[in-house]
Every structure is written in structure tokens, then in C-alpha cells.
Length: 324
Image 1 (tube, one colour):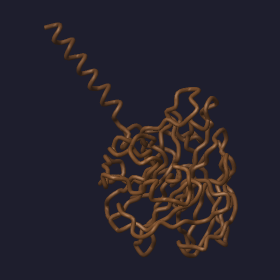
Image 2 (spheres, one colour; image 1 turned 180 degrees about the horizontal axis):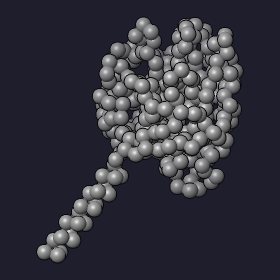
Image 3 (cartoon, helix red, strand yellow; image 1 turned 60 degrees about the vertical axis):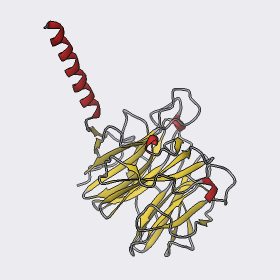
Image 4 (cartoon, one colour; image 1 turned 30 degrees about the vertical axis):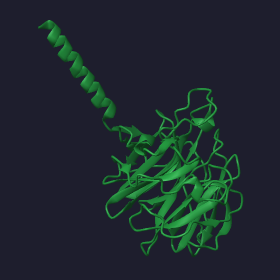
């Protein structure tokens, strides 16, 4: 009887521990970086029904390891930009895509008609090089499943660059007329229309020439202007271009974010929320040993000039105030 009771107690405690691990937890940000218990990278954000949903990569490289180790993506949400809910377990990992080998690199989620589409960069299992996949869910926090069963973009579809990692960093937007577009690329910026189902390209892949373009495009629209921000040179700053037409011509406007401390990469998301604009990025502030491989998400305000151009971002340790 005693043995039975002890066994039952052990099982019960194990179940409670497992529940605690998988239960959503609240994080109060005390400035930048906003999340300190885990390394986060390559942020993308979406505003949906009064909340900001933040999706990040997850740096897991061992101390001293010279390279990226990333197997899954993380999801956080907030209604004030300071208090965040971490949605656990992680809503998606590379194993979601049976055709992929590894490398849960930069991604973005967008909503259409009540469904949520998550575009990701991963290493393909059989076609050499990086690829773009897309997953879908009925909830912004998942679970997500592979929407196609195959990659949306593979390295053999893009010929402008010779290296096998030019299919990185997808960013997507739905224009005012309902047409969706996908932008991505390392070394050159690719873009293409998406069909309304959000899982197929709708026409040819085109390229955009931008000064000192490296990677990490982010596409957004404001007051009739299209903005295409991107990682500039290496180590990376963030620059941007503007256009009145999503097909260009794109006019280069300059640097908006300087080198992010202790990180060779610079990856941004730009959103509007409760009357303010935000610049979401990562740096290596929490990792003196391997900044570029142990990155952390930060948030600062973004401001526009009267003519629509963007002022330089001021990176701070204080971060942003609670959005009311």
C-alpha cells in the first residue's frame, strides 16, 4: 500500500511538473532585451485583435560554439508591449516540415481569413540549400502544421545568386487590394505574388536591387508608401527604401539602425500598435561569449518624419513604456 501511494505521488508530481513546463507563463520586461531567460532572434511581429504576437527564432548554441544552433521557433504575446505571455510548448519546430533537415531560421506570421500562415527559412533535406516553407494554424499560437507538404521556394528556383543560402528571411504582406506578396533573400532581394490560398506563388519570382543589401527584408505600408527595410552590409546595419508602388521603383533612403551591440546580424520587424510605431530587433547584450549566436530581442520606438521618411532608431536599454 505504501509503495502504491509513493508511486502515485511520484506520478502526480511528475504530471504537475510537466504541466508547469507546458503552461503559458507571463514575463514582465524590465527594458531591453525584453526576454532574458532564453535567447531569442530574428523577431517578427503581428497585431491581431488588440494584441501583439511576437515570433522569434531560438538560439541554442553551446557556449563557445561558432555557429547557429536553432531547432524551433518561439511565440510571445502582449497587450501592452511590456508584459508578455510565453506560449509553451514552442508552437513549431523544424520537424513540422518532414522535407526539412534543420535550421529554424528567420520567419514571419500573417493572418488571412481567420487562418494564420507562418513562413520560415529552413535547410532542405534533399535539395541543397535553404528553402522557404509555410505552415498554417487556426490560432496565432498554434499548433501549426505544414500547409503544403513541400517547400514553397527551393534553391533551384532562384538563380540570381550562386550561393545556396539566398532563400532566407521571408517577409509577407497583404496589400489593400487583397493581393499578397512574399519577399525574401540573401545577397539579393527576391519577391513574388502569392495566391489567395497563401501557399502557392502566383507568377514569376522577381528581384530588387538595393544598395548594400545583405538579407532580412521587412515589407510594410503606411499612408500610401511602401517601405522595404533590410540588413545592410556585414556586420549588419538596417537600411530602408521607399516606393509608391510595390513593384518599384524603390528609392533608397538610408540607415535607420546602427550595428546592434555584440551581434553581427541585424533583423527587424516594424509595427504600429495603439497609436505608436515600434522597431523590434535583436542584439547580443545577454551573451558576452557568443553574441552573434546568442541573440536577444529588443524593442524601441520608431518615428516618421512629415514626408514619410523614417528617423534613425535610438537603441536603448530602457525600452518602451506600457502601451495604453
